[in-house]
Length: 387
Image 1: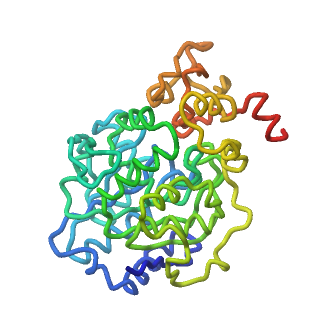
Image 2 (image 1 turned 60 degrees about the vertical axis):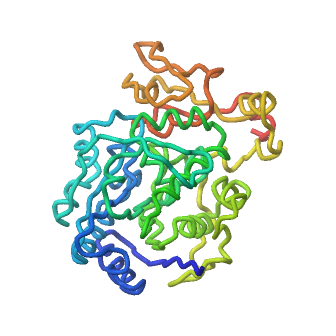
């Protein structure tokens, strides 16, 4: 099977619709992905209620443009996501769509906004780690899914893209349990591969016009102008190319290593036809990754497991620390913590992290909207890292 990724220059979001329209036509037209009368779920990355300029979420210009193309092909676009760390209820979803600009984009594109907070337990017949999972209802009630992801760094997985976007199929706070039961990034990568296999997106669009670098994927990340849209019918191919553009070392990309171990393709850029540009033209030499990705202290120790692995992870991994000057006591971090390592017992009812219970999944850092969670190494980690 041949894999293609289309790279489309797009300097600003005003040009997103024209760029997407032209590229989809070159891919065979929207009729290749949508049949008249179908309901197509547009699974955007809506991590939390953040404005478009924060680069936390898929930009509404991209979501709206894709929705318009679906409508023109005779389908109905249904926009949905399930924000991490939040209860699944209609008011939460309304706030998410309004704050991210998605609601306005839906109105302009005549798309539906999914306000259904329900989920259902389903079988994953091809899952290797997950045999069953609770999946948001809109993903089960549609005829097909489009994966509208965002190019961002990720303090736990290195990067987040098309495959990681499938984690949004898991409802709100239910996500917490998956981090608790699969705390290692290799294990978590297996969860994501099972979910993307179930999701089976017909089309993947990566918003890399304004991407994110640094301590992503949430408020602590830094917007980075990249000026690209990436399209493919293969989420794995899209992530391979995105990782190459960003410069994420292969040995620190747990997702690709897990996919390779399963015998999935593609996992290398040489297996993919890149249309519209060359990798040499697209690679960004100074893309900034989270400190734990840059340092990779755990990589020097090999695949330690059991007690030794847990001990090394505690000693060498970064540990969340609460900045009391920024914490407002909202308890988002506490509710999102799979290890129950956070209590609201700090000064003035602010958050407090208990390091021995922390599993280093960094959900607290990812979801805190106030940049109140820093990631710090202990003295041994700083010594080995030369800092």
